Image (cartoon, rainbow, N blue to C red; front, side, top):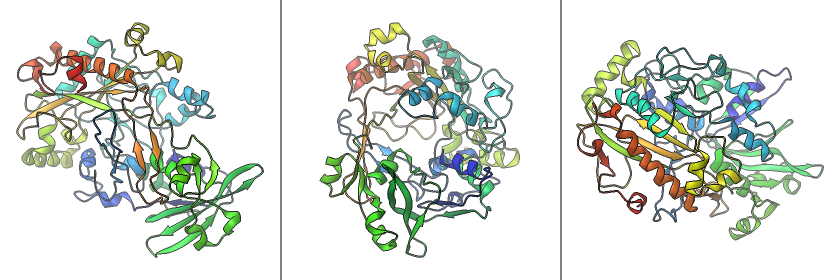
Amino acid sequence: MYSRTISNLFHSSTPLFVLAIWVTACIRFVAAQATSELKPSYDFIIVGGSPIDWDFVTAPQAHLNDRTIQYHRGRCLGGSSVINGMAYVRGSSALYNRWEELGNQGWSWNDVYPYFQKVKTRQNNDSYTTHDASAYGDGPLAVSYGGWEPSTSVAFIEACSSIGVPLVNDLNDGSGIGVKQGMITANKEFQRSSAYNAYYTPVSNRTNLTVRPLASVQSLLMGSNGNATVAKGVAVFDHVDASPYVVMASKEIILSAGFIQTPQLLMTAVCDTASHKEDKYANIFCTQGIGPPEMLKAVGVPVLVANENVGQNLQDSNLFSVKVHTRNGTGIQLALLDPIELQKNLAQYRANKTGPLTSPGGFTNAFQKLNTTEIADLGAHYIVNENRMDQAHVQYSYTGAFYPMNVFGNYFAMPNQDYFSVSATLLAPASRGSIKIGSAMATDPPIIDLNFYAEDIDRRISIQAFKNMRQLISQPAFADFSIGPNNGEVSPGAAVQTDNEIWK
């Protein structure tokens, strides 16, 4: 939303001067293997864990045998839109309406949909890549279906009817229920369309815009506005010239550091300007906090504003998979990881913008809404109590590879074989996590506790989703592709049968 806001500012009739602060530099650092003209959509493979990734690690998860989970977050101009898997999904309209019900005015579906409609796409002809033209427009961000999809992705779409998920015309019109080939944030040449090149690049030469890459926010400078405490300015440290700066705003401060670092900055890096006025050195080293008082006091942060909600009520979606050995050429694993195949496919992309490298993984998405009988049988009464009936509750995703690669298990992908994976994600989890601080320093990593499966109902829904994934891969649509017994399943494997075994 921050990039969209900057774009909107430059279409305002009021003269404005905008300063954007980014802790690292621009996306050009990513282009190590190809020029921007020749760079295909598979670029996300090379950036995970790189200098433009915050590479967070969660706290040990108490309900997952103390596992830690790696958390990729973009550390560059454009943020996570530069390094993510490029999947583009809007979600059910009821989710946005729920945000407004909770007090977030201006975030209902009717409020945000006009901005979604500015996203541009293009016409595709087959029944699995249709779209509703009224849901899109001609804005700066481009989305598209992939230019190449593995044959097993079509089988996945056809199999989804077995679990009650229908083929629909479009998944981005607010319904959010059904199955379709996955859209990606890519332009007409199947290159990544990110917040950097969609929103920043077109206005980068504006004289009233200053971007400070390689600069970090040290403190949000707070002041009074009647009875309210509001942000008045920002203390910044520029790592290029090793100098501190204080910037005061005549209009407003927009804090948009993502769901991890926004609460961290609030809890560790605010300063009452009444104490220091505009002394840049005092403001750089001033540490106060807005957040839960006991947490702040425990690490020595003076409380500026007590607010128990900061960093709390974190809801995130976990993912688990069934992996299948498939005939070579019917997935995308070898196309990306086999050196000979990769060179061939790269040459094809450079020649005419076609082939496997126009699709990052062959994403295909199916969104399932639990009916009242299923909710009652599972004991998922919280879905009713929280007014979350009218939305997708489980997402099933197809990836044309052994995905994810870095997990615990008893089987590892063979270098000369193709695979596909079917994954499930809970979209309405009952468990709640948090972002906490372990020190008074905003430069120290925060404590990210997703708290997965703290509520037993999440476990029950996940086990049911796992059984649905096995039902999917057993459908006739996959018969010509899967290799081996048990419908080709190699992980977790046929030895896993009971609910307890599935859970473990």
